[in-house]
Amino acid sequence: MGGIVVIGAGQAGSSLVAKLRSLGYEGALTLIGDEPVPPYQRPPLSKKYLLGDMALDRLFLRTEAYYADNAITLRKDAKVTRIDPATKQVFLGDEAIPYEQLALTTGSEPRRLPAAIGGELKGVFGVRRLSDIDAMAPYFTEGKRLLVVGGGYIGLEAAAVAALKGLKVTLIEAAPRILGRVAAPETADDMRKLHAAHGVDIREGTGLVRLTGEDHVDGAELADGTHLDVDFAIVGIGIIPGTDLAEEAGLVIENGIRTDDYGRTSDASIWAAGDCASLEYRGNRIRLESVQNAIDQAEAVASNMMGAEKPYVPMPWFWSDQYDMKLQIAGLNTGYDRIVTRDTGGARSHWYYKGDTFLAVDAMNDPRGYMVGKRLLEMAKSPDPAAIADPATELKTLLKA
Image (cartoon, rainbow, N blue to C red; front, side, top):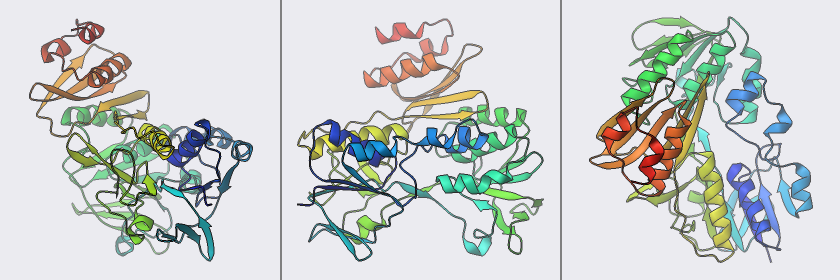
């Protein structure tokens, strides 16, 4: 029999196979990845690794020996060309690998600029894979001119690293403000001030017409008519879930690979977890693009593949490190209509409400605000906004209210 095959050797895939073995699964287990290295952490790529503060071997989630010692067949640098649910086989070209159960942890890929506007010029990078970071690293030298396209967290984190390394950084965002899709204006204001203090030139409401250059990017024409001279560009304009294989196999796609409460897809033998998977959350179908969800959802899927039949209930949380500021986010702010700001001097947080219901918190160098906010969400409690805004309030008392 085929055992279990997992396609996608990122955080979710690595967590899934490890959980299966820890739960006592003894059958054949294969993890297939399309990169030439073992599964690794992605968040440090554009921060500590690019800064030179983390060595390559520290990126790896587990040693290669771990997979061998646990009878996990790790197929590196392998491209799955199709899935045949009827015969329960995964194909790597002409090679067929049978499965009893299949898990898709195919992650996501960054959106690219169209070739027609210079997206394929040399010196234009996305931020997703180890190879992306290794390719751009030689450009991170003092005085180089960097254009960052996109004012989301990926773009802002790249800008922060570049500024710390002494580059001249311009960030453009076509929308009226940075973080427009993911954070309140108050959080965006704080981030804008932080970057301005480090010399980053942020231009909002400014679209890109095209990148210029014969073979290598040398400039950018902006929608406001200006031209920038640049040495390289980083594009952070969102990600696309890895659904191609699932779609070609006939699985239902809905904002990613549609899964039920247990992680099953529309095929009872196929499961999905991580960035590629969509799930129901408070009446909406969402994808949670975070390391913690990749781990938690993958481990839940592993348990359910073993027969646990336990619904996965996510608790969304995220983080972003920029300069000496750690932004920690708990919850999802979708539908908020009110922001309550708490400022205690060195720590600052923005609390999202819909009516009287507490939805989420953005905490900046405020670990206590983050932890209490996260716990309140887990307890389904909505603290009094006036108490949140009062810096004299001891937040822990709100957990007992």
